[in-house]
Length: 238
Ligand code: ADE
Image (tube, rainbow, N blue to C red; front, side, top):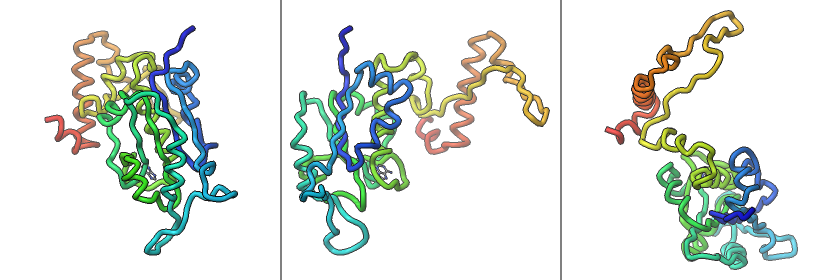
């Protein structure tokens, strides 16, 4: 069978063992196996400045932690040849632009994506600017490095590539696709008796077989849930 790689992903990291990590499982793991995307992991320590592969140094001006050197990033980047002009270079950092579904939609259109994972206190700012990385954060909280964030970003992009998800309809209905959270889901048993003996029914409308009513109910639930849990999103919708 002939496979066509839709996206080439390159990760620059100090912890190559952390990959493919979650990207090796479920639909994304299948997409990797089926060559819908490729994953190349580059160990920054291979471009370190000494025999030990040191990549970092103390921050100028003082302060805690260590900073990854710009020359190390440059050498690692120069080891990569982009095969197209349609590529992006991303540095994952809590001080970047916040990731959103809209941003994932845009990023999923690249043919090649290079991701630099930060560690320690950060990366020398000259490397970010001169080597032209866009800075992206996966949320307003701080992780110990960019590796988990890279897996979030790659999974979010790859599942948008046509042919990766079994049911593309679910992309249209899921949370954020229209600034609303997704409606709640229910499955068997229709009456669930919990271990205390209390019975919980599935909403009647979902077993009515009336699809117009079901669609209307789901839209109402989406709006209710968004108003309650994410009023900021709901304001964008109206
Ligand atoms: N590295 C550490 N925290 C991060 C975050 N919130 N987003 C992206 N990269 C990070």
